[in-house]
Image (tube, rainbow, N blue to C red):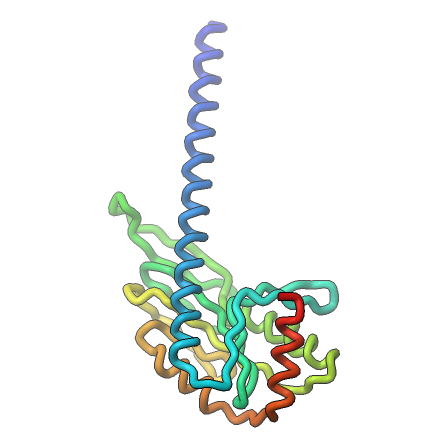
Length: 204
């Protein structure tokens, strides 16, 4: 009986560490995939925008004791833009007013599953709030634009309720995202642009 219990405990421990290892590997793979998507997006922004635009990656902004980690901030004559990047496979379904969106995928074994994730439009709204207030506290009063960009070209998207306040772009509408940045209505002076860039890169 004791031998059986010890054997059972051994099996449970082995299963626990196998699953924990798989989970760690999956987390590492997701991070690597996300980093690659962000890098590709950065290359697109830098390569597509004309001179006079500065692209800042992985910006941390703290306001009221809370920190936002922002994928990209673009600064130029036409304004300040937060770009939230998502690198996700499968089919992405959601409405901009929903709290969560759904990712529908088929895993490597052919099993279909769904995963909920926090609505990136709401996520980027928090980033906008903190960055705008951070700039205001440093005597820069300007509107902070935002957009969500899904970088995975093989994914499918069924997103509803999109507004001009925070448009959602995909790999297929990359040119529209560039146009959105270049044709915004803000008209920042060269000195204001330089001040914003200095504020956001002072710790680099």
